Amino acid sequence: MNAKLNALLANLAVEYHKLQNQHWYVSGPDFFQAHAQLESLYDGLLPAVDDVAELILTLGGRPIASLAEVLQQATIAERADEPLSSADAFANVRSDYQALLDQVTAIKEAADAESNHLVSAKMDEYVASLSKTLWMLRQQAA
Image (tube, rainbow, N blue to C red; front, side):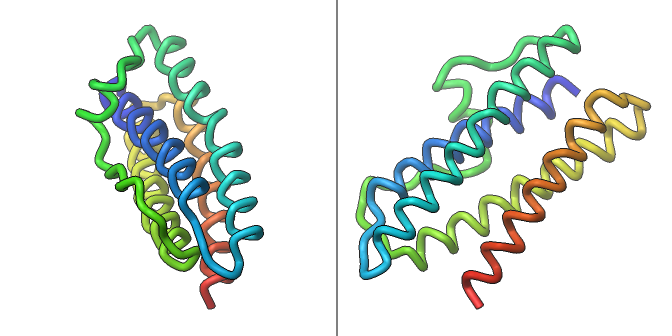
């Protein structure tokens, strides 16, 4: 379970910084709305980084803490420091959040198989939160 949670920790950390990157580089006629929404998303994601690290510690594991290790384990890719439209930014977010949802769902299933209620309950929170955010992002794109 420690390896699965560290992989999630890596992806959450990369996604947090990727959201900041897009917040800084978003441009276009809807800049003010997109800029604010991307900031809200990364502000909302940051507590999960700490929660997952502390969950790993609670389980007796060791959370990854170096950027080199984060980048080695992450499956969510960083993005270049380049301007992008809000449509592209939110398409990136939808794709990344779907990957995070898939990952937390798999961790929940593994935790349930191990009767690890602590991890299962935490993943339930993330499934609910990511699902709601994805629904809102899909509505925005419609």
